Amino acid sequence: MSNAIETRLAELGLTLPDAPAPAANYVPYVLTGNTLYVSGQISQGPEGFITGKLGADVSVEDGAKAAQSCALSLLAQVRAACDGDLTRLKRVVKLVGFVNSTADFTDQPKVINGASDTMVEVLGDVGRHARSAVSAASLPFNVAVEIEGIFEIA
Amino acid sequence: MSNAIETRLAELGLTLPDAPAPAANYVPYVLTGNTLYVSGQISQGPEGFITGKLGADVSVEDGAKAAQSCALSLLAQVRAACDGDLTRLKRVVKLVGFVNSTADFTDQPKVINGASDTMVEVLGDVGRHARSAVSAASLPFNVAVEIEGIFEIA
Amino acid sequence: MSNAIETRLAELGLTLPDAPAPAANYVPYVLTGNTLYVSGQISQGPEGFITGKLGADVSVEDGAKAAQSCALSLLAQVRAACDGDLTRLKRVVKLVGFVNSTADFTDQPKVINGASDTMVEVLGDVGRHARSAVSAASLPFNVAVEIEGIFEIA
Image 1 (cartoon, chains in turn green, brown, purple):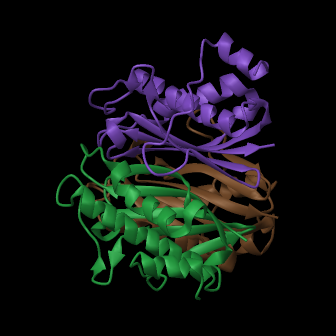
Image 2 (image 1 turned 120 degrees about the vertical axis):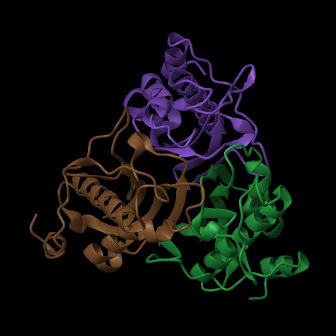
């Protein structure tokens, strides 16, 4: 468990949660070949789901924090898929970020940066990924952000 | 055609439709390596498109049935890609489910479970998949659900 | 640079833009194995972003033009990933098209056809792809369309 990535997380004051259980009848990730598909992770923290709608009752700054929580959950799932060894992660390939927002919200990139920045801060070049950021009309349990990911594993 | 999967479908009282034709200028699936990408399948049954908006004029229960119809269309496409032999399907890798809903709807997971449950009931462990479930502001032809899928093929 | 694809683009009166820079802290594409994941490309032209909402202030015809601009940006990214040689593109595997629309808009397929048709016109059978087309509640910078793509590269 003690390696450069775990050290970097600690330096950033970040903690990976336990890999969240799926909200329904599916699995948190599937590995096919070297490609790991992680289910959409919804924004949550120690106090529970991070909810609300951007453009209404959630600021861009708080939305970015919600997106960061999704990134940490994604990494927790990757770590579980790698039997606890995140050094087996070769590349964050792609993230798709869904923002729970009003119809006139336009700062999806700034919100999802909360996840993208975290990936790069924690993983360096391994964390640099392709990405899409869009708004959803609404999200499960009224969470503010949901992000799914594709990862290359050694 | 007669194999364990076809038998299981019959036991469940389910019938795969003919693989639906695309609604526009694209193809229903593309195979690259062992990975099969199936186009978004929109909810429909023998009487035509299953339409409406969750949170307004479609119940969660009916939404789940709409999602099941998407799952059956996805499997119909996989069967076509496998020259009629679904035993060549090694894994349902990932589904992304889009729910046509109002801005305050929060039961996306229960709706998309209509597809996830069907995959597992029909295919067993092969059907266990990664998943995202989000709301779309609206969907083609006002259908209630659209689901795309990634599959591993032998 | 001079090859059948570049010639075909010229015949169609189309020009690939410079590969657009990402709007935030991520990269325009990631190659893993032979699979190239290109980040969501937002509608834009020489005059800047192509903005507006389908069902409100953008016609289906103009939406299709916006989608075409996304297709050209996707191809520009693929060309960059192939060191300028689009003949290394073996297949457009999948597109996911997000349409910025009102809650009652139902012509997503016609809008995204602006991208799908362009792929097939420029690339022939190589351009035939799987696809999903859905509405987003809103999109970055209020653009009309955002499209991400997966491509097989030689």
